[in-house]
Length: 422
Image 1 (cartoon, helix red, strand yellow):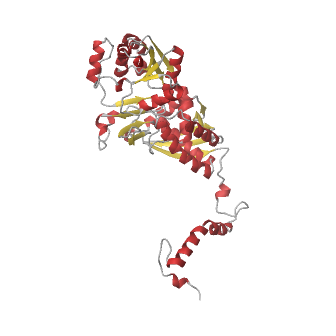
Image 2: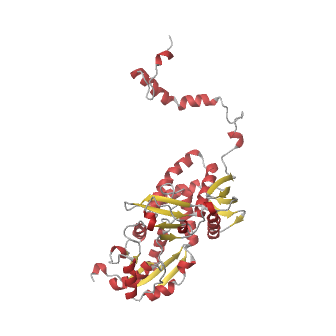
Image 3: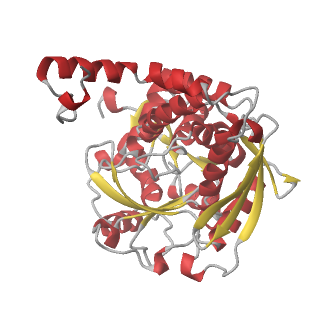
């Protein structure tokens, strides 16, 4: 083995699925190294976490570290992203994208704690996740070697992986394989691959796992009230709640009303289009409520500028640049905008729809007496004439100069002579 390839100890991002299970013996066989498995509980569900320790050890790992990062995921990653208003390509609430930097960050920290000289992941060479993992490692500890088996090994199919597992006594639970590739956490569930690769194909109802179809949702709407403090959700229906139980409750509520289904053909970072179907019931509710509260708490200039940076923020998250100076700088701006985003939002949920039923805040910039058409001291309607004259002056001058030079304005060519005075 060359010195370039020599690795003593590696921390593997481990899910316990077929791919990461066979990566353990593959790393030992090809790098001659000790393997430590790392699993982050970010709300993917107990079924995915059950039996991981035994499986990792039997696969050849020296140990496995499992951490509950659900609250950290929400408070340090998801909520700041929501406050920024980040949505990728008008639909995607970035559920997979925003989870990767957290997992990779902890992977780096554990590698440092354990004296490892490398980290590894099971991302394929076609997707976005390889970029998100590796950019995080590069930003946080560029001295660590990154091993991506899918870019090195000869395994090309599920059958190849099963054969490798049998040859190396890797415990693999034989079960019917889903035709879809899925990623799950407390924020969302994604579906890709299989028949979804045809953008004309309508997803079958059996594919969805978190939400009922809007047609099957209750025939009566459900009204909820969400409370925010400085842009952070802190309560539901009059009850103060911590982030994880609040998100769990919103997921349950949204799911039964068919909220949060998205079908998107998106532009991957690696240069190709892909289709994904996402279920984000609680997240969709949170985004809607937060935006409504901002509508009364932010002034026009701030709100409009914030809409522009939301697009850039979403690109940074999607493209794996969470740990970048620009994202930090944008967070600084967003943090200032959220100081007065405090109050209540009332929503009516009905068959896949989120209907705004009310919003209020002690910092609301909306005043009914200011907005009315009656006479008031703060606004005299006669002032509008001077404002309009000044606001439209550049347009008027441009038209007058065009008429004087060519006989017609930029947009029209009527007979202006009838307007001339003797």
